[in-house]
Image (cartoon, rainbow, N blue to C red; front, side):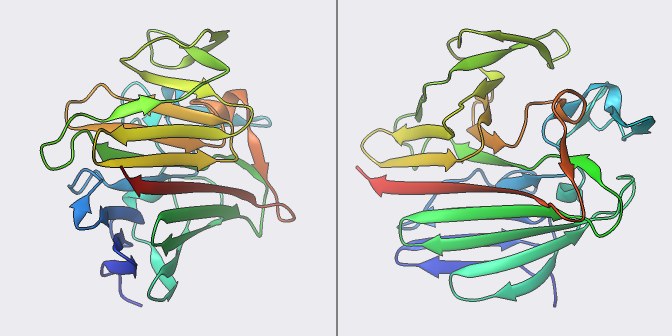
Length: 263
């Protein structure tokens, strides 16, 4: 099928998916109000087969060391799938299934499947990485850019309780130490062993909860236009420090659900 944008609708919610632009969610509108920052690089893109930065773009798989392009020098960042065109496997009024076959520079063969399912008050994104060949380390995550303000209202407020914050080194990567969560501004990874649970509140307008059974979330609020709440299956540089293995018998799967209500 073609890679034109897909529109999902449910109640007064509308989602735009962009298979041809990295399989990203290009827009999420509730009662006509756009929640995601607009633009080719924004919306909400899938981070796969890794999340955040890889130190010096290198990761080890057994005895082999693999080098990824340094697209955020001196590191590699956010995976390769956001740079490719995805295929449409299936689509209906309120659900779509997209697929992406991993290609070079990623050194392993595999397939990514992403399902977007919309209801009147929630969007659920599910992603899996499968291999039919050799096993390899991988990560799954999502990188939404939520608008800091909606239609000129008050700035969004972020509320969450993390068990720890990954100490961030001068190279923007976790040092391996866990510290007490610090106040904003953030470009930091937090641990939530009970699952990701972050609430965004646009005062007097909308409350949106980002949830996932995964226990890692990166929160980024250093830009004026938007804030990012990124659930993921491991910390930045996790291909090296906390690899999750995709095998022919066991794919890697993750889900995030965003639930909203007017206030």
